[in-house]
Length: 113
Length: 120
Image (cartoon, rainbow over all chains, first blue to last red; front, top):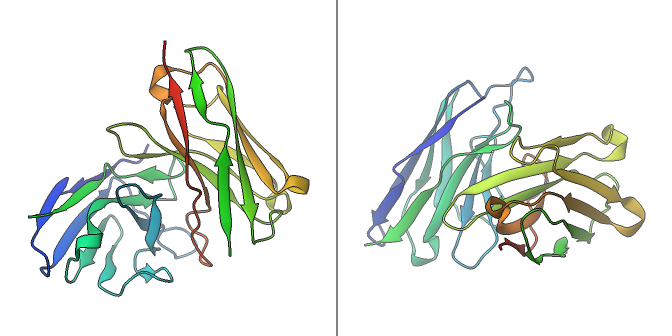
């Protein structure tokens, strides 16, 4: 089974400063169709999860452009260019190629210093 | 506006059953691929299962932790997906969300979640 890891698991950030979360999979997430099936999700306190980024770097509609995704193969990164108070919450990467079908990483807790 | 609305959560004892519903508004239900995802207390997000549309073969997939205990079904005439949960365990305690397929490029939609508590 594929294993997803994230680092750090806790990320205190100063408002206005950048933040970066790393996600690593135990197997390549590149599909035979050439696409890479790695998404990023955010769950803010008291809210349902929402997808921020799909297929590595495609930002969802309504997601602020301070969020960006990059990476390839087994190593991926979510960046927040300038953290705002509303960004507090948990961030999860998720793969969609290997069994179990959709595997989330353990989550990274972003907080304000 | 696309909305997903879950219902059916509650408090049950270990070994009992519960059926959750997820109704889709604002988008054609028949072609929709939908998933169940849960968030247990103190844990991270966990994918539970997925239902493909009938036109895509109607396949059902389950996480290993719920396979053989949980069953997903759908009623296209009612725009509703169901999650039948049998032989519930304390570790099934979580908020259960339904959501559109995580890799659907045309959008991402989640319900508000429904709480399931399994306790003696």
